[in-house]
Image (cartoon, rainbow, N blue to C red; front, side):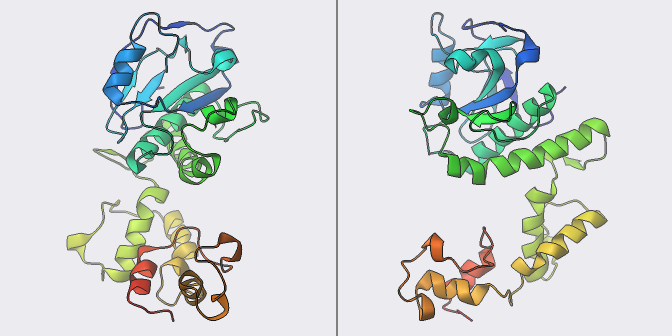
Length: 283
Protein backbone atom coordinates (compact mmCIF):
# COMPACT_ATOMS: atom_id res chain seq x y z
CA UNK A 1 0.00 0.00 0.00
CA UNK A 2 1.44 3.38 -1.04
CA UNK A 3 1.92 6.15 1.49
CA UNK A 4 -1.36 8.19 1.54
CA UNK A 5 -0.43 10.40 4.51
CA UNK A 6 1.16 13.39 2.80
CA UNK A 7 4.19 13.06 5.12
CA UNK A 8 7.46 13.08 3.15
CA UNK A 9 9.52 10.01 4.07
CA UNK A 10 13.29 9.97 3.53
CA UNK A 11 15.04 6.62 3.24
CA UNK A 12 17.97 6.51 5.70
CA UNK A 13 18.40 2.83 6.43
CA UNK A 14 20.37 1.61 9.42
CA UNK A 15 22.30 -1.67 9.83
CA UNK A 16 20.71 -2.09 13.27
CA UNK A 17 17.88 -4.41 12.26
CA UNK A 18 17.22 -8.08 11.48
CA UNK A 19 14.75 -10.38 9.77
CA UNK A 20 11.31 -10.92 11.28
CA UNK A 21 11.72 -13.89 13.62
CA UNK A 22 8.34 -15.45 12.88
CA UNK A 23 7.57 -13.71 9.61
CA UNK A 24 5.45 -10.65 8.86
CA UNK A 25 2.19 -12.51 9.55
CA UNK A 26 3.07 -12.37 13.25
CA UNK A 27 2.94 -8.53 13.33
CA UNK A 28 -0.06 -7.56 15.47
CA UNK A 29 0.67 -4.06 16.79
CA UNK A 30 2.14 -0.68 15.90
CA UNK A 31 4.18 0.70 18.80
CA UNK A 32 4.80 4.44 19.29
CA UNK A 33 7.86 6.01 20.91
CA UNK A 34 9.85 9.17 21.54
CA UNK A 35 13.66 8.94 21.26
CA UNK A 36 14.32 11.67 23.85
CA UNK A 37 16.58 13.64 21.53
CA UNK A 38 16.83 15.91 18.50
CA UNK A 39 15.80 14.75 15.04
CA UNK A 40 19.16 14.94 13.24
CA UNK A 41 21.04 13.67 16.27
CA UNK A 42 18.73 10.68 16.66
CA UNK A 43 18.99 9.76 12.97
CA UNK A 44 22.78 9.88 13.14
CA UNK A 45 22.90 7.88 16.36
CA UNK A 46 20.54 5.13 15.16
CA UNK A 47 22.52 4.73 11.92
CA UNK A 48 25.72 4.04 13.88
CA UNK A 49 26.69 0.34 13.54
CA UNK A 50 26.47 -1.59 16.79
CA UNK A 51 23.72 0.52 18.38
CA UNK A 52 21.13 -1.88 19.72
CA UNK A 53 18.17 0.32 18.87
CA UNK A 54 16.19 1.38 15.79
CA UNK A 55 12.73 2.37 14.56
CA UNK A 56 10.89 1.76 11.34
CA UNK A 57 9.79 5.41 11.09
CA UNK A 58 11.13 8.48 12.89
CA UNK A 59 8.88 11.56 12.62
CA UNK A 60 10.24 15.11 12.85
CA UNK A 61 9.02 17.08 15.89
CA UNK A 62 6.81 19.44 13.88
CA UNK A 63 5.64 16.71 11.50
CA UNK A 64 7.48 18.24 8.55
CA UNK A 65 8.88 14.89 7.44
CA UNK A 66 10.00 11.46 8.54
CA UNK A 67 12.93 9.09 8.15
CA UNK A 68 12.52 5.40 7.42
CA UNK A 69 15.42 3.77 9.22
CA UNK A 70 14.30 0.15 8.86
CA UNK A 71 12.42 -1.32 5.87
CA UNK A 72 9.02 -2.73 6.76
CA UNK A 73 10.24 -6.13 5.55
CA UNK A 74 12.72 -6.22 8.46
CA UNK A 75 12.47 -6.07 12.25
CA UNK A 76 13.45 -2.94 14.16
CA UNK A 77 14.89 -3.07 17.68
CA UNK A 78 12.70 -0.92 19.89
CA UNK A 79 10.68 -2.97 22.39
CA UNK A 80 12.82 -5.84 23.69
CA UNK A 81 10.90 -9.15 23.42
CA UNK A 82 8.02 -7.45 21.60
CA UNK A 83 10.15 -6.61 18.57
CA UNK A 84 9.04 -9.76 16.77
CA UNK A 85 5.38 -8.71 16.63
CA UNK A 86 5.45 -4.92 16.32
CA UNK A 87 6.29 -2.20 13.85
CA UNK A 88 7.49 1.05 15.38
CA UNK A 89 6.77 4.73 14.73
CA UNK A 90 8.64 7.29 16.82
CA UNK A 91 7.90 11.01 17.20
CA UNK A 92 11.16 12.89 17.68
CA UNK A 93 10.85 14.89 20.91
CA UNK A 94 11.04 14.45 24.64
CA UNK A 95 8.24 12.74 26.57
CA UNK A 96 5.32 15.13 27.10
CA UNK A 97 6.66 17.84 24.76
CA UNK A 98 4.94 16.81 21.54
CA UNK A 99 3.74 19.45 19.04
CA UNK A 100 0.23 19.33 17.55
CA UNK A 101 1.59 19.08 14.00
CA UNK A 102 3.86 16.26 15.09
CA UNK A 103 0.99 14.43 16.77
CA UNK A 104 -1.04 14.77 13.58
CA UNK A 105 1.78 13.31 11.46
CA UNK A 106 2.21 10.51 14.00
CA UNK A 107 -1.51 9.66 13.81
CA UNK A 108 -1.40 9.65 9.99
CA UNK A 109 1.51 7.24 9.90
CA UNK A 110 -0.01 4.93 12.54
CA UNK A 111 -3.26 4.77 10.57
CA UNK A 112 -1.39 4.00 7.35
CA UNK A 113 0.64 1.18 8.88
CA UNK A 114 -2.41 -0.31 10.59
CA UNK A 115 -4.27 -0.39 7.30
CA UNK A 116 -1.25 -1.73 5.41
CA UNK A 117 -0.93 -4.60 7.90
CA UNK A 118 -4.67 -5.29 8.00
CA UNK A 119 -4.91 -4.34 11.68
CA UNK A 120 -7.85 -2.53 13.34
CA UNK A 121 -7.52 1.07 14.64
CA UNK A 122 -7.83 -0.03 18.27
CA UNK A 123 -5.74 1.41 21.07
CA UNK A 124 -4.65 -1.69 22.97
CA UNK A 125 -2.65 -0.56 26.04
CA UNK A 126 -2.60 -3.95 27.75
CA UNK A 127 -2.29 -6.02 24.54
CA UNK A 128 -5.50 -7.83 25.47
CA UNK A 129 -7.23 -7.25 22.15
CA UNK A 130 -4.52 -9.14 20.31
CA UNK A 131 -3.90 -6.43 17.71
CA UNK A 132 -3.97 -2.66 17.26
CA UNK A 133 -1.54 0.04 18.40
CA UNK A 134 0.02 1.05 21.70
CA UNK A 135 2.57 3.28 23.45
CA UNK A 136 6.06 2.30 24.51
CA UNK A 137 4.87 3.20 28.00
CA UNK A 138 2.28 0.41 27.75
CA UNK A 139 5.00 -2.16 27.07
CA UNK A 140 7.45 -1.04 29.74
CA UNK A 141 5.90 0.39 32.89
CA UNK A 142 9.03 2.39 33.68
CA UNK A 143 8.43 4.46 30.51
CA UNK A 144 5.80 7.09 29.62
CA UNK A 145 6.60 7.83 25.99
CA UNK A 146 5.40 9.22 23.74
CA UNK A 147 3.04 10.82 26.31
CA UNK A 148 0.79 9.79 29.19
CA UNK A 149 -2.04 7.37 28.48
CA UNK A 150 -4.66 10.08 29.10
CA UNK A 151 -2.98 12.46 26.65
CA UNK A 152 -2.58 9.70 24.08
CA UNK A 153 -6.24 8.70 24.32
CA UNK A 154 -7.47 12.28 23.91
CA UNK A 155 -4.97 13.69 21.40
CA UNK A 156 -3.79 10.81 19.19
CA UNK A 157 -6.28 7.93 19.29
CA UNK A 158 -9.24 9.89 17.79
CA UNK A 159 -7.05 11.13 14.94
CA UNK A 160 -5.79 7.62 14.20
CA UNK A 161 -9.35 6.34 13.89
CA UNK A 162 -10.38 9.24 11.65
CA UNK A 163 -7.42 8.91 9.30
CA UNK A 164 -7.83 5.13 9.21
CA UNK A 165 -11.41 5.47 7.94
CA UNK A 166 -10.29 8.06 5.43
CA UNK A 167 -7.43 6.01 4.01
CA UNK A 168 -9.56 2.87 3.94
CA UNK A 169 -12.24 4.63 1.91
CA UNK A 170 -9.65 5.98 -0.51
CA UNK A 171 -7.98 2.58 -0.82
CA UNK A 172 -11.28 0.85 -1.65
CA UNK A 173 -12.58 3.58 -3.98
CA UNK A 174 -9.78 5.79 -5.39
CA UNK A 175 -11.04 9.29 -6.00
CA UNK A 176 -13.81 9.05 -3.42
CA UNK A 177 -11.95 11.34 -1.04
CA UNK A 178 -11.31 14.98 -1.92
CA UNK A 179 -7.62 15.91 -1.91
CA UNK A 180 -5.53 19.03 -1.91
CA UNK A 181 -1.79 19.54 -2.33
CA UNK A 182 -0.96 19.07 1.33
CA UNK A 183 -2.98 15.99 2.17
CA UNK A 184 -6.55 14.83 2.66
CA UNK A 185 -9.77 16.46 3.62
CA UNK A 186 -11.57 14.75 6.45
CA UNK A 187 -14.71 15.74 8.32
CA UNK A 188 -12.91 15.86 11.65
CA UNK A 189 -10.10 18.05 10.29
CA UNK A 190 -11.93 20.91 8.55
CA UNK A 191 -15.47 20.93 9.91
CA UNK A 192 -14.54 22.79 13.11
CA UNK A 193 -13.09 25.74 11.20
CA UNK A 194 -16.06 25.72 8.84
CA UNK A 195 -18.57 25.78 11.70
CA UNK A 196 -16.99 28.84 13.30
CA UNK A 197 -16.69 30.60 9.93
CA UNK A 198 -20.32 29.88 9.01
CA UNK A 199 -21.55 31.03 12.42
CA UNK A 200 -19.45 34.14 12.97
CA UNK A 201 -17.82 35.01 9.66
CA UNK A 202 -21.07 35.87 7.86
CA UNK A 203 -19.90 33.41 5.19
CA UNK A 204 -17.44 35.90 3.76
CA UNK A 205 -15.80 34.03 0.87
CA UNK A 206 -12.65 36.14 1.27
CA UNK A 207 -11.90 34.37 4.56
CA UNK A 208 -13.49 31.02 3.70
CA UNK A 209 -11.50 28.17 5.32
CA UNK A 210 -9.65 25.69 3.15
CA UNK A 211 -12.58 23.29 2.72
CA UNK A 212 -14.14 21.32 -0.15
CA UNK A 213 -16.32 23.33 -2.52
CA UNK A 214 -18.92 20.58 -2.46
CA UNK A 215 -19.93 19.38 0.99
CA UNK A 216 -21.51 15.94 1.12
CA UNK A 217 -25.02 15.57 2.65
CA UNK A 218 -23.73 13.18 5.30
CA UNK A 219 -21.29 15.88 6.47
CA UNK A 220 -24.14 18.40 6.72
CA UNK A 221 -26.01 15.91 8.91
CA UNK A 222 -23.00 15.54 11.20
CA UNK A 223 -22.64 19.30 11.41
CA UNK A 224 -26.30 19.76 12.37
CA UNK A 225 -25.92 17.23 15.16
CA UNK A 226 -22.97 19.14 16.59
CA UNK A 227 -23.98 22.67 15.69
CA UNK A 228 -25.29 23.48 19.17
CA UNK A 229 -21.66 23.62 20.31
CA UNK A 230 -21.11 26.72 18.17
CA UNK A 231 -24.29 28.72 18.74
CA UNK A 232 -24.15 31.76 20.97
CA UNK A 233 -27.14 30.48 22.92
CA UNK A 234 -25.52 27.11 23.64
CA UNK A 235 -27.32 25.75 26.73
CA UNK A 236 -24.11 24.60 28.40
CA UNK A 237 -22.29 27.98 28.27
CA UNK A 238 -23.70 29.83 31.36
CA UNK A 239 -23.04 26.93 33.74
CA UNK A 240 -19.60 26.34 32.28
CA UNK A 241 -18.67 30.04 32.55
CA UNK A 242 -19.77 30.18 36.21
CA UNK A 243 -17.87 26.97 36.93
CA UNK A 244 -14.69 28.18 35.29
CA UNK A 245 -14.72 31.55 37.05
CA UNK A 246 -15.94 30.06 40.32
CA UNK A 247 -19.11 32.05 41.05
CA UNK A 248 -22.69 31.26 42.09
CA UNK A 249 -23.24 27.62 43.01
CA UNK A 250 -19.64 26.93 41.97
CA UNK A 251 -18.12 29.48 44.36
CA UNK A 252 -16.66 26.71 46.53
CA UNK A 253 -15.27 24.79 43.55
CA UNK A 254 -11.59 24.88 42.79
CA UNK A 255 -11.18 26.29 39.27
CA UNK A 256 -11.11 23.60 36.58
CA UNK A 257 -12.08 20.84 39.00
CA UNK A 258 -13.03 18.20 36.44
CA UNK A 259 -15.06 16.18 38.96
CA UNK A 260 -17.58 19.03 39.24
CA UNK A 261 -17.51 20.11 35.63
CA UNK A 262 -21.12 20.92 34.57
CA UNK A 263 -22.91 18.20 32.66
CA UNK A 264 -23.36 18.76 28.95
CA UNK A 265 -20.14 20.74 28.55
CA UNK A 266 -18.32 19.70 25.35
CA UNK A 267 -14.93 18.11 25.81
CA UNK A 268 -13.33 20.76 23.58
CA UNK A 269 -14.50 24.29 24.35
CA UNK A 270 -14.93 26.30 21.09
CA UNK A 271 -13.02 29.54 20.53
CA UNK A 272 -16.11 31.74 20.68
CA UNK A 273 -16.79 30.61 24.26
CA UNK A 274 -13.31 31.62 25.41
CA UNK A 275 -13.61 35.01 23.69
CA UNK A 276 -17.01 35.56 25.25
CA UNK A 277 -15.68 34.65 28.67
CA UNK A 278 -12.79 37.08 28.31
CA UNK A 279 -15.32 39.87 27.76
CA UNK A 280 -16.96 39.00 31.10
CA UNK A 281 -20.19 37.65 29.58
CA UNK A 282 -21.39 34.73 31.69
CA UNK A 283 -24.99 34.60 30.43
